[in-house]
Image 1 (cartoon, helix red, strand yellow):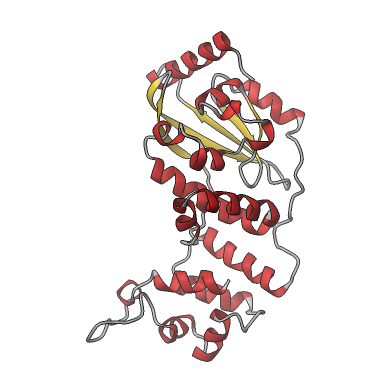
Image 2 (cartoon, rainbow, N blue to C red):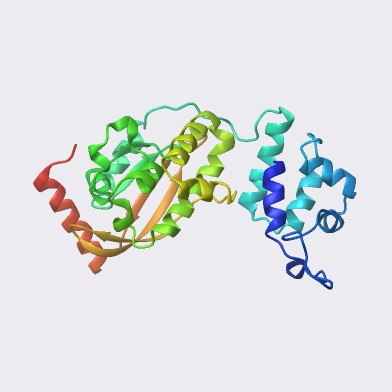
Length: 275
């Protein structure tokens, strides 16, 4: 929590919150502690204790005031509250889901949405199940053993990922920001994946230190696929109730060139078979 607050404070300048910058060169990047304390309506000493980790039970009201002063998003505010629960040793606000396989209903959905590539993911983006088009959309993912299939691991470690994703930097940043949301609900699995990816390369570690947090709720992803060529697909993320599992579907409107590309991808999977 202390590190999260320090980093966020460093990203907000005085001008961003209507404060004068004053004469001379500021030695502190972003807001000074006393400036943030004043904006949040708390004493400087109390805020310093929070940021130094000496205050473990700040109230939700204080954390809300800090979130507003730091211009945190709703996802970031929720993450700050979760970090506070962790520091205080309280029961997490979001239940920590035990890993379990994708249920039959979700597996049926994977078949129902074909030829749209689709996956059942857990909190850390382990692929619990995928339809044939889902495996084909990410070349090489299906070659990994089922227990190693993870879309974040794929993004950072698979040789195909950097050419597959037309905007790899944005995809990588989104992956890491999502993984931050799992830090509180699946801490053990998150820590193991973070350690693996940090050891494998500096890019992940640098993004992880940014403490960016947001929940993926859908959007668009541009691909440069070796079979269907350049294609931009919409994606939707549907969460199940209480178990941390999500259905991720890439899709295109029928009658468009993008949908034709998905039909071609489905035909290609039938020709070569899918693991």
